Length: 443
Image: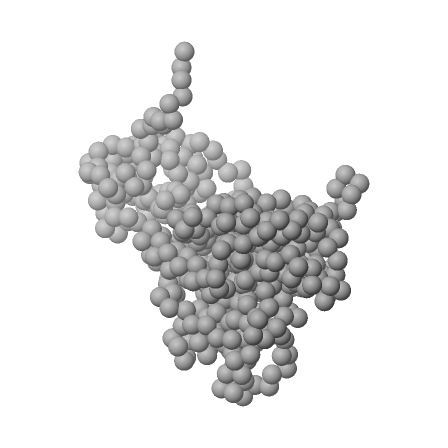
C-alpha cells in the first residue's frame, strides 16, 4: 500500500535552490519555458522563463542530445546541465546544457513579442491576447505585486482579529440600489449580481465582531473610462464596537503601512522590474469634504460646480494639493454629504447634512470608500422613511438590527485602482488580469 505524505520528492531544482546553495560545477535538472533563443554562432543562449525569474542556459553544438533546430521559443522543456557563475547572466549564473527534454512544442509562432522587455503593442491587443501577453516579464510582475497587496490585506487583518468571510454574489437586490445592477433570472426568480458585500459583512459583525472579504463585485454602469470596470475585486472589511469612524481610517492606514513594507521586503524583484516607488504611508492627512473643495478652488482658481460630490478633476487636484502642501501620496477626505451616501451611512450628529464617512484618495484617485454605519434599528427605519424607501427585499438585513448590533463601520478598497496607482499606470485595465468593461466579455 502506498500513502501520500505531503512531501514532494523531486530532484529538479528551483531558482532559489541555486541562489542559496553551493552549486558551482554541479549538474542539475530544471524546468522552464523557452523565453528567448539568441544564436551567437558558436554558442546559443537559451533563456528559460520560470515563475521565479529568468535562467540563462548555454547550448553548444555537439554537446547536447538534440539539434538546435528542434527547439523553439515558448516550448516547455526540462534541461540538464552544469552550473557556472556568470555575472552577465540573469541572477549571476548560467547552465551549460548537456540534455534537453522537450515537454511541449508550440504549433505556431507567437502573435505578440512577449520576450521583449516592453511590448510595443496597444492595450487592446494585449487584452485580446491576454493568456499570452501575461507571459511578458513586466506584465507578469504587475500581478505579483497585486498578489502582495491582497496578501498584505489578509495577513494584516487576521493579525488584528478579523475573520475572513465569503458572501454570496447572487442576491435578491443590491446593497446600494440604483440602476447599476446586473439582473438575471434565477430559477424563475429575479436576481442580481452583488454590487457589494455590504449587507452581509454588516450582518456578520453581529457574529464575529470583525470580518473581511476579498471578492469580485459587479457594477452595470454604462461607462468607458480609464478608471472604471464592470467587475472588479473589492477588499472589504467591517469592524464592530468602534467609538469613532476614525478607527476605520486608522485600520486602513495600518494595512497600507504593513503592505508597503511587505512589498519592499518580499517583492523587491518586481519593484525593480517595474521601477515602482513605494508611496509614503507613515502619516496620512485627513481633510473635510467641504474644506478640501475650498482649498483646491482657492489654490487652483477653480469654481465649485457640484457642492455634493467630488468630480474627477477635483480628486486629482486634491491629490496634487496633498503632495505639494503635506508631501502626502494618500489623503483621507471625510464628511461626505448625506444625500450622496447610502441610507446606512451614519450622519454626523453635529451636522446631519454630512456623514461620518470618508474616501481615501491615492495620488488624486479615489481607491477607498468607507465610514461609520447606522447600528440602531429605529434610526435605520427613520433614514429609510426620509428617503422614501421601504425595507422590502432587506428583511434579512434589518432582522440583524432588530436584535441588537454594535456600533460599527468599514470600507471597500478597489484592488485594481490601488494597483494601477502603485504601478503608475493611467488605465485600470493595465492592472486587471482579465478586464470586464462595457465592450469586453472575453477572454
